[in-house]
Length: 220
Image 1 (cartoon, one colour):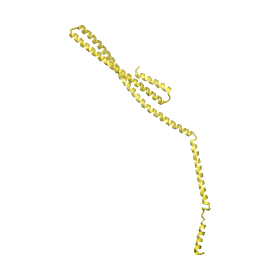
Image 2 (tube, rainbow, N blue to C red):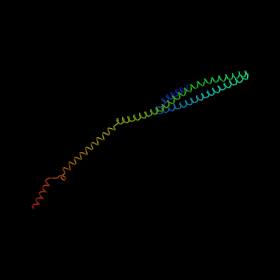
Image 3 (cartoon, rainbow, N blue to C red):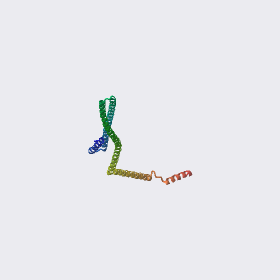
Image 4 (cartoon, one colour):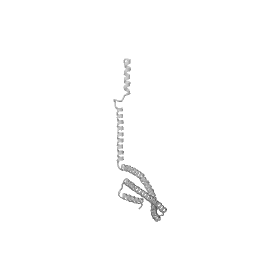
């Protein structure tokens, strides 16, 4: 099974399991992101292993190719020395190494294609993990905002459903009554002072005083 298909199945299985077991969206998102990062790490290990295998194939291809060239040169030397028996043996060895080199070359080409596919898949997976991390942050922010709005609306609903506001209204009515009573008492006291003989001035008293002063002045 290709590594990225395996990762896809593992993540899908983890998602279904989490949704069945966990109710907190934040915990689910954190666990999913952790799983994705773990699988990304495993994918990087797989890609690195594939690259190492490709390097080994390349080395074996070059070594066999060099061996084939060496045996061809030996065959030339044997021919020059009129030693056809050894020349044939050298050519057989040369063909053996050439066949191995060709086999490694075919495997190397296939491995290069596989590595290219793995690298593309790894880049896609890295982008998905980064996207998931950003989306997690946004989703958690939206979750907290929704919870805050929900709490506010619930509080408002509780206040509206209770007698809290009506209690304020009743207290305000009592205060208004007290203010009206105080104002009435103040008006009554003012009216009482105006009618008090001590504070009431009689204009005739002033005339009597003025008449007495005039008679005194006239010697009467």
